[in-house]
Structure formats: structure tokens, C-alpha cells
Length: 424
Image 1 (tube, one colour):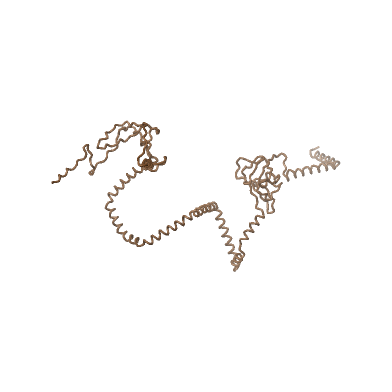
Image 2 (cartoon, helix red, strand yellow):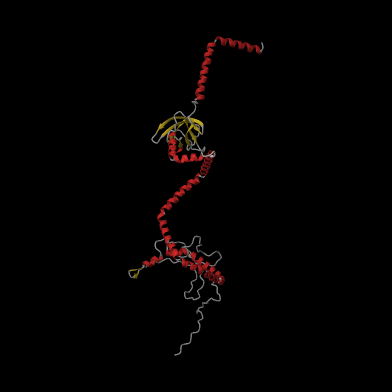
């Protein structure tokens, strides 16, 4: 007996047995069909998964926006759960969403109540802008500021009614008549609509700059309004000044007539003194540099910045009640030894000063005066010890001598002979 005959005998035997027990086999097949169909409905169509873990998230909404319990919860359109309930709260509406616990949803995601179609069918949609932690967990609360709902129909109609109330029927009738006077009317209307769309798209592209301009304009206009009284006073004063100028018109004309001759004379003076003028400017630059470094000291003398009252104020306070008043402090003051040869004060030749004169004691509590602590411009070098290799008693460069110099000897300059005594 070959394999084909064995297969045929087995098939015939199976069919005979099945025919004898056809009622029992029909019952078993019906039960299997019911089980498979029920499983498909529960796990396939209804999406039930008894092994899945879920978490509950409370979403606070300003209004429901048509959202009902049992609606779908999605992550950018992908279903991740269901809306378990929609409850009232003290601040609005709370939608309790049951979400798949394995789905990572950023906690700062924007949540929108969206509709599948014009008929409604609202659902809750999470729209994150990134995929970074922290993520939502069981019992998380989403604030109203992160949510948005569709504009209800009553609000749209109310806004439309407000907009239509601002339209003047007479003006609208005039526009309709103007557009309908010729076959070009629809083309004109199309051009107006296209221009409006272009204008709106242009404004939308520069929306941040437009908002900033409006805010700055508000501040500017408010400032101008605050300056209104001052501007009126300025206008009145300007009117007085211009009236005086108008009264002096003849004098200005005479001044302008004499100006060319005066300018020519001034130009001749500049041409004659151009050589010495350059030297004068160089000398003035040196004077300006020297005085500029001492401006902080002058300011401290006249207008102190780190103490109350200037030196001149202190001198003026000493004069009162018909006398000069002062305080004498017998406490010995600290004296710094500069460790340099002293010159006799009676020398008449005015020797050059030492170049590196400084006090080695840097403590400001005992040395409150001197070049080290004197006010100076920012970045100015503070006097200190001589550089390496330089003698400590080095003097400044000697004063230059020229044909106009007056020598100062120990006996003084030579004097001219005395005039003869008058005869009597």
C-alpha cells in the first residue's frame, strides 16, 4: 500500500466519523466562531488590552469645547488613551484622561480639544514641541495655560454680529453699485481681495516688529503727552525769541554785511601767525594734558564725590560771628621718610625735582595724602619705586634754555645801572 492510498483511506475514515458526529462538530465550530468574533470585537475593534498599564492625567480646561467622556486621547494624532470623565471644577472644566503608561509625553506639552470633522467628534490631542523629560506621570495636572479649545459657535456668531453692526448699509450699497456698473466689477472685487490677502500676509511676516512698533509708539505718545505743558511753554518762549529776532532784522543784515571784511581780516591774521599758531596749539596740548590729569583732584577740591562738603565749604564755615574759627589737633601725624637728600630752601637756582619721589609705606590708614592716594583719571599710573637699574635720586630733565631765558644765579640776575640822582 502506497502513501496515496493511505492518505485516501484516512480522509474517507475522517469524513465518515465527522458525518456520524456532525451535530457535535457544528456546536464546537459555532462556539469557536463566537469566541473568535468576540475577541476580535473586544481586542481589535474596541482596542481593549487587559495587559496594558495606564495612568490618569487631569487636564484643566477653560471650557469643555464639546469634549465628552469616552472620546479618544491622542499624541499628535496617534491614539494613546481615552477620556475617562469630564468634571466641573472651581476654575472651569477638568478632563480626566486615561493614557497608556508606556507612552512618554512631555509634561509641558500643549493640549488642544480638536474636532475630527465639521460635525464635531471632539478629542483630546497632546502636541509637544520636543521629546525631552520630564514626562507625564500618574496623577499629573495640566494647567489651563497649556490648553486650548475650539471657539464655540455662539462666540463666532457674536463676533460676526459685532462686525456686521459696524458696517454702514449705505456705504455697502455704494460699494455694490460701484462694483456692478460694468462687467469689470468682479475683477475689481478680486483685486481688492487679493490686495487684502497680500497686505495681511505681509503684516503677518513682520508681526513681532509690528507689535514692538505699537508698544514703542504707545510709550512715545505717552511721553509726548507728559511733556505737553513743557512743549507749550517751549513754543511760547520760541515765539518770544523769534519775535525778538524779527525786531533785530536790520542789525542782523548789517552784521552779515560787515562779516566778509571781518572774516578777511581774521584770515590775514591767521596767515601771518600760522607758524606761531602751530607752536601755540602744541603748547596748549601740553597744558591740556597736564591739567586733564588733575581734573579729578580739582573735582575733589570743589565738588567732592566721596565725602560731604568741599574744601571751599570748609574754609567758608570757618568765618562766622565776626571771627575765624578753627580746631587744633595736637595728635602727632605720621610723617613719611622719602630717603632722599634734602635741598636748602634758600637756594635761588630752583633745582629740578626728583623723578622717583614716593613713600615706601602703602598703608592708607597712616598715609591719607600724597601722590599715591591723590585722585587721578582711570588707568593713570600710580607713582612707585624706580625701575630696576635706575638711581633713586634721579632728577627730571633740566629746563631748556634759549635766547629769551633769564639765568638765575646765586646772586640773582645782573641788574641795569641805577639812574643818576636828580639835580636840585
